[in-house]
Length: 326
Ligand code: UDP
Ligand code: MG
Image (cartoon, rainbow, N blue to C red; front, side):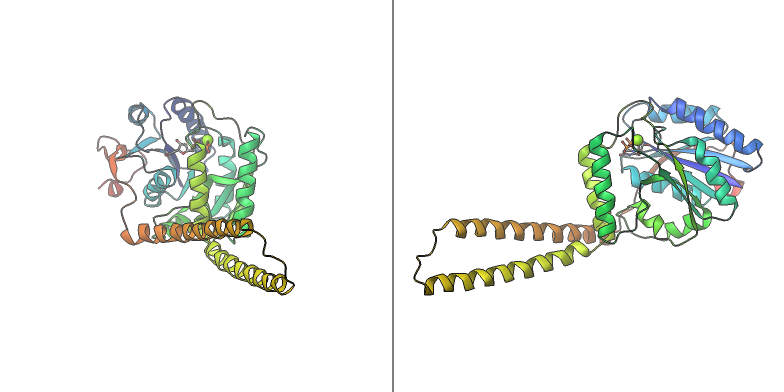
């Protein structure tokens, strides 16, 4: 089989050398065990501002497995990964996606390949524990998975974007036209045979997270709103609840008026005014979120632009057939 390993990279100059060494070693072993005949290690440079692309280009020229795609600007982890998967879908029998920072255990890749050879189309890498994550990240991630499940989203608990996909699964994924990508949810909803391999998540090898809190929150919101329309329905329920509450307040008001009590001051009025104002704004916000998504989808903008592709360098013959080079 032909195996591709797809690695999105954004400002990863500190880790690339080690990542290349470790992944190449895994590929070497897979090849000598005759599980894999041809292999490629594809780096997708997501518009890095540091020397990431220089390194990738140098590795592509010297290392037997490495190829590189350079995207014209930073399009984000999910879109960059998509670019790599699209490249692999046209060339490989299966593709493994993994982050550049070596937090995911490269040693379970052979297990993924075994599952693939047994006929599984999608193999999820699932973290056993999150010891190395901060308490905060662990808790926020946990509540995210819960929320997603509760809202009817399709997610594999503690699975990020470390997975193997067969060519069939890759091509099915490529048929998804949407621009708002939440890959782990999309892959889980493909419906092909799946398996799970477990590993311990490590510390980032070097450098710092390219997912600061802001990006994380926006990713979580994207995930929910691309997979569930339930928040819209909850707004309706909330609206109904408010109507019931206000009816009760009217009844109470009439009752206390009939008893001759003076109406309580304006405090209650003011409080409810603010509360309802807030609720309406929240509701508008949630609806706006979906309208924004629709806007983005109807524009059908291209997901990314490739600026350079080392595999198109004619002097090199590696993984690619002559046909794919055209
Ligand atoms: N990444 C990317 N584009 C971005 C941000 C991140 O391609 O705009 C890549 C990054 O290089 C890494 C992966 O996505 O390979 C995951 O990022 P990171 O490890 O920083 O996220 P964390 O593990 O902290 O959630
Ligand atoms: Mg990481």
